[in-house]
Length: 194
Ligand SMILES: CC(C)(COP(=O)(O)OP(=O)(O)OC[C@H]1O[C@@H](n2cnc3c(N)ncnc32)[C@H](O)[C@@H]1OP(=O)(O)O)[C@@H](O)C(=O)NCCC(=O)NCCS
Image 1: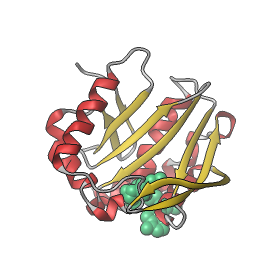
Image 2: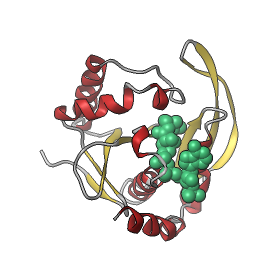
Image 3: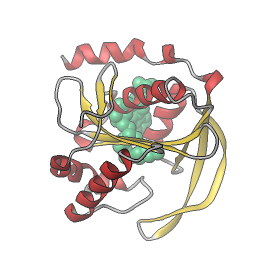
Image 4: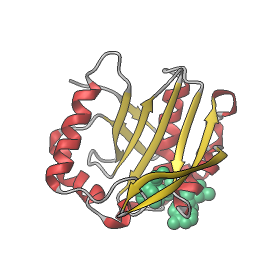
């Protein structure tokens, strides 16, 4: 199965494989990453189950989830995740996580921008939302930089790391989406990475 492959300026999004488990565990088993996610750090077994579940759901028709591996453009190894989960009428929820050793290289913004291009383009979505933990400055920067707007606060939205946590809800509508918003300095960063 070849599956979906989406190419950005710095990253590529591809379907998961079961041999992604070690690289996926490096992300989802790391407290630095999961501290701001809606679930606690996973064990290797839980990561394997998560990959198997995502691979199975990717084969469903109609497909309602695009949960994809993020790889650097130059390589094929997973360094993160990006997920578009369809919900309601022409709407989706978007989330992402990048391995801590690869933070601040522009990967999340590139991966999210690429997935939005797919969502508003091929999937003809009208609305994409993101629920972000208060104080998650990195995620707020990623989404607001792309043009997401604040909608409100979801009280006790998730139970994570032993406590209820609010989320800040952000969204982007199709007519607000501008792919041109991203590339300039991403290209610059990609040159720096070589
Ligand atoms: C949020 C996360 C995905 C960002 O990944 P990243 O690849 O480091 O982000 P990028 O390099 O694409 O940065 C995008 C923007 O965010 C800014 N940013 C990144 N980390 C930041 C931080 N810790 N504080 C403030 N701004 C930050 C960058 O400067 C950049 O801004 P710019 O576009 O104006 O240059 C990453 O920190 C992560 O995986 N966090 C843990 C999981 C998580 O919280 N996911 C989001 C759930 S909603």
